[in-house]
Length: 360
Ligand code: PHE
Image (cartoon, rainbow, N blue to C red; front, side, top):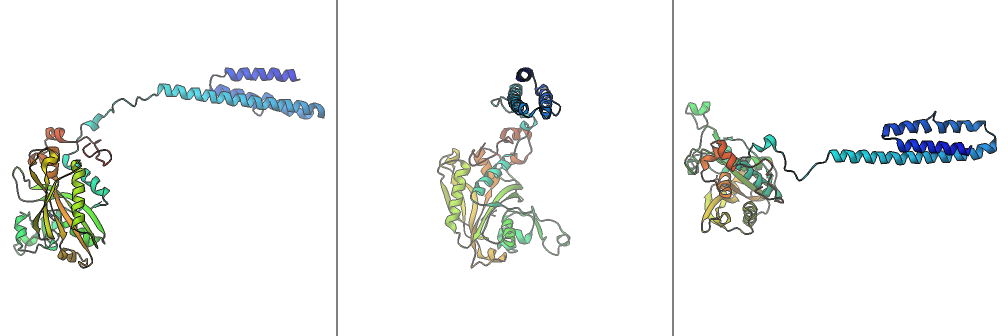
């Protein structure tokens, strides 16, 4: 009897070792351990044996059964490992190869879009959110609520595009709609719809009737607004300084706050940066207007100016784009010239991050 078992074991071991793939191996398993397999049949024959014989023979078959099961498992995992290695060998990826860009390589991100992404990244890190407003704005939000009443001389300075409406066409009253002359109406929209503390930046197109080498009728600004119960001019200076250092990617930046006037801020300032940051020592370049939000503006938005205070700034996006990337003529920025875009534009993969670098 035990000779028969030894022979069976040798036969099965041989078949297992010879199984070249998982399918063949499984057939061997079924033929030995399946319901009608050789080993299973031997086990079911036990019932017909004398008790003594059954005891010793049963133990021997069970030992055989577990040894065969072990051999099957070992062969199975060996075959699986071999299959995986074969797959890895044929599907190898060389991660040092350059990326195949395809069509993605042809498209370019406009420098103004790129710079906006850079600015958003820097201010997001300081806890600012992004707010937006429409290009067609009411006269009330663009001027009146910003403490620029009708007949105020600042309205002339803005060279406003007024929209024709039935009213203005009949000459009965001024048009209530304009192409916004600055992003400051987004300050109003934000204060009217959100409770302080407020920390936002608002990018967008603005329009003024003006056109020469340094002015285009449409250009871009980015507004900043912070409102809470105690923020002050010093916080504004710090934020703007941190912004300039991160944006121009320099350790130190020379800044000059010049007293200025805006109807919606008091006190007001204009900010120049020392142009050595961009390789032009000795020159100052104006980049933004700013100030403490006028209490009247806060009240116009339905907030209590005795409780809340804050500061705002408005920066010329195109201007700092030209400064940072050495673009000489503002008009080229909006001429939709593919050659210009190929030269000055950015790859879609140049996503600015504080950790990875601002200018890609
Ligand atoms: N809106 C102003 C302009 O267009 C800039 C500004 C914004 C100034 C916010 C102060 C505060 O010139």
